Length: 162
Image (cartoon, rainbow, N blue to C red; front, side, top):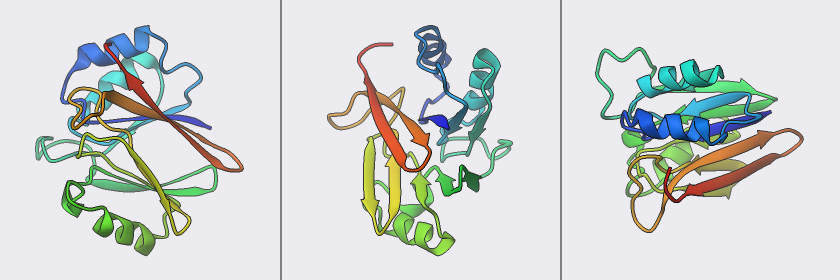
């Protein structure tokens, strides 16, 4: 199963339009959105026809229809999806890591820091796709493509200008 993972889009729908026009979601079966603005996921689902599952982040409105965090079972993998702000991910990933262990997650997907990251520790993958709107640090606008099968393959995709 091929999954696109993105987040921290902050209502920049033009970027989503251009990503779709550039074919960045070809062969993708599912899109996961890490929040900030989770309603962008509904827009993305509308223009691509691909199911989008998203969570809300710290800048999403309180009345947002999205959950704060979710546990998904995909292709035999347990995935914990959260924005990350409640776990202090701008400072350390420790709290998020231990929450993933508590849940029994194989994969923890989060956003908030706007910095792409993949770390594998104790048979658990922590994945942050970065931000498609406001990258931080030395990173560029980015998202991830994750392929689930007998193993987990992740490609972090940096974008110059979209």
